[in-house]
Length: 208
Image (cartoon, rainbow, N blue to C red; front, side, top):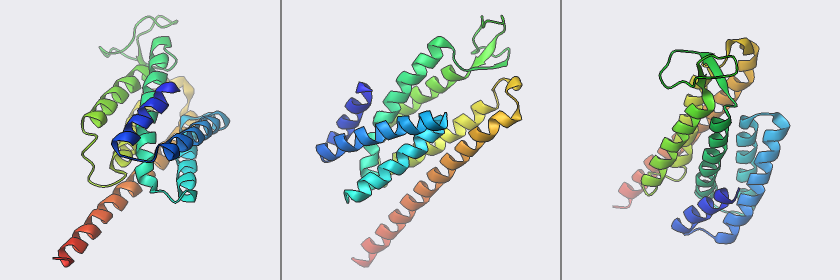
């Protein structure tokens, strides 16, 4: 939890955002996201709930929502890395039996299986590293949020196909709905950002 706030405040300072708005918003969003995840028994519930609360909070504060959501994103990535590290160490998310070289051996049944928590951790480490490396390259506000949403949804969709077959097709329905919601949100954010770039470009040309 502490890492979430440290990462969020550091990013807010880089963007020269209001510290009080960032701190208050981070607390409200973090608590609501955890509550939604608990009530829905799903990570997607936490992500969607947190995003809705964030949009509502910054709307009431009349603050630029996409700009203030970026520190929350960076804090959320740091939190997710820690959470998935725990999952990877305890092997909480076993997948299908496989001969893949990166799979984990020695599960309780003696099989070699995909470790979905480990795979997601590797992805999150790469994504977080790239975001910090290119954090100042933002074609439009909300760019990192759009890319993160789309990339995470795509990876989670791929990992769902590696789940244990005994879970049954019905177990994938909530996951698919969550992935679909993230994909739609990511596409809308991307289209909104690209449209704003086009509009700004036209206004700049008209002012010449």
